[in-house]
Amino acid sequence: MTDGTSSTVISDDIKRRWSISSAFLLADTPSSLVYRVTRADGTQAVLKTLKPRGIGELPGMAFLSWRDGNGTIRLLERHDMSCLLEDAGDTTLRHYRLQHGEAASNVIVADVLTRLHAAGSAAPSELTPLDRHFAALFKTSPDRHQPALGEPLDFARQLASQLLATQDNVKPLHGDLHHDNIVSGGARGWLAIDPQGLIGDAAYDVANIFGNPLNALPDIINPQRIKSLIVLFSQILTCPEQKILRYAIAHAGLSICWSLEDGTPFEDSENAHERLAFIQIARTLLEL
Image (tube, rainbow, N blue to C red):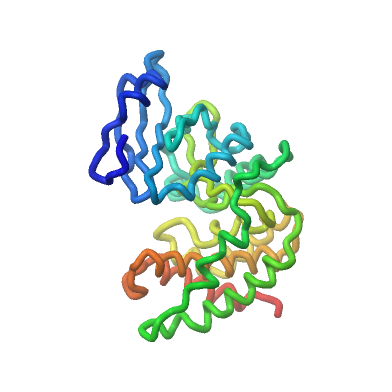
């Protein structure tokens, strides 16, 4: 398989190596090509091949190998920049939530999170430290066309600095847990996919849930939902409620910076607008 975004052909070497008889392209993103494949024995799997921009996803593969299916899909095999993954199904938690509601969705989040954070063997060395993960927040400055971002990003930076300097319960983290990265439909039920593969304070691993799911802004900025998630996650992770909230706000700032790094103007970035709205509401719940 080549690196070009226009090419979606699986190499003969990969076909032979993993006995792939047929394939269906699921996604062609700037970082990877993703297929659902059928193997010679009739079983299905997912083939993911990273492009040069996707090299940052390799720690996620190390996380999958370390977790060995406990809360995550299994990494079946890996060769260079290609990985053969367990096929966990097509139903995302975002779609499930639309049908069954927030409370039912959070039961699943809690179960997956508990399994992700269960004790394991020694952490793999390839994981990305949390302070490096936050780099964009500290190097991105909004330009003069984005005055609304200056103070909120400064506030998020201050929180992140304090949090990163006082981490505890440091462990391997999924790093990108949200409603589109929890899926079901396979034999093993709900599983997390697409980890970032971080190592750091356990409280960070739920930060992205607060800004999700997609197209749910009224819920994302609902103070009662924010409070409910804070209580739920602090109980599961046995850490202070305010710490959960602080990481959620810091992550929202980081997410805005990623959007700006992608070159999307702030006025055109739905993600940046949603994360800014979350920061504005969430910070009113902080105990300063």
